[in-house]
Image (cartoon, rainbow, N blue to C red; front, side, top):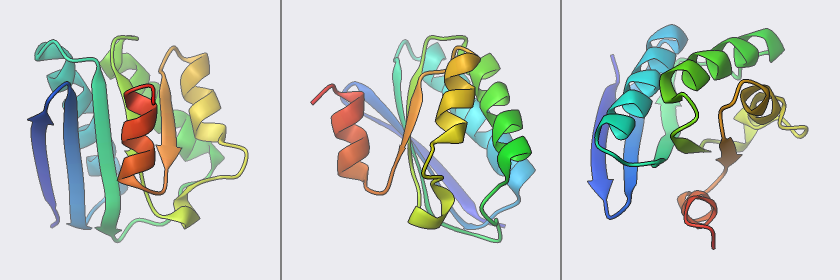
Length: 122
């Protein structure tokens, strides 16, 4: 099984998943990180999944499902920037749009710097 870590640096919470993962467990762990970020009184979460293994890029239905899960976890109070490998990013950003429709503000990036810039409004 893979590893997970959560830390707070300044005004941004950071959650990282690495190693062998199972999609359903990863979705739950990210939802838990969103809830924990909210409990800490923070509204920005960077999720880094660039080094996960064992998970294939999800299809449309799966993206819709996990964005709904994360929307319920955040209840509109946590913005999430996801950092992942390019093959996990859809050109039309369907997951981002599905999340937005559910009240979840998020975006997806290839680098942590891009994600931080977006979270911090730079």
